[in-house]
Length: 127
Image 1 (cartoon, one colour):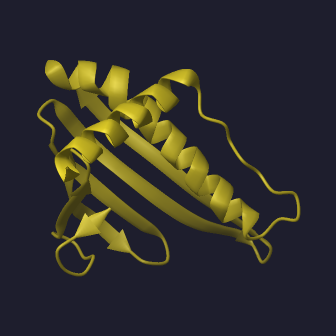
Image 2 (image 1 turned 60 degrees about the vertical axis):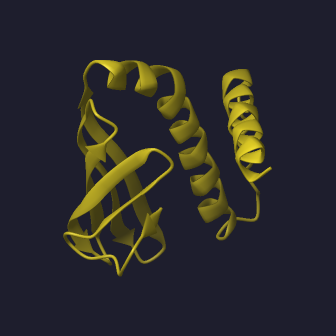
Image 3 (image 1 turned 90 degrees about the vertical axis):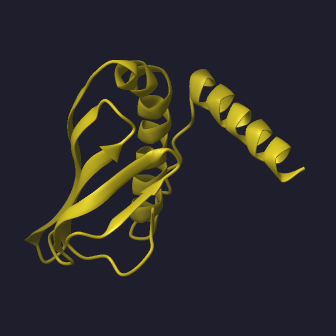
């Protein structure tokens, strides 16, 4: 995720082809984004942090979105599988900072294929 300036309500940013603005932000509780691109992504994406007790914290990730037109295809065949893998990797890294038993999620064939295509495309652009 990249932002031109600091993260605050109204800040614009994104990653890859996804663009959004910060709609709600409390560093100790929530960050919520509203999608602006790609066309057909209508909704929000958020992370919430909640202290359950002195030794337990819940981190919740939510996408509450409807898709339309081309956005439905982009979501179903590319963004959703890549996004799910990214979230799994991120949560593994987070948990591994606090756990003796290390976790490492494996990517399925489709995610590996998509990532390989993205790498090839980036390499062509850099040549």
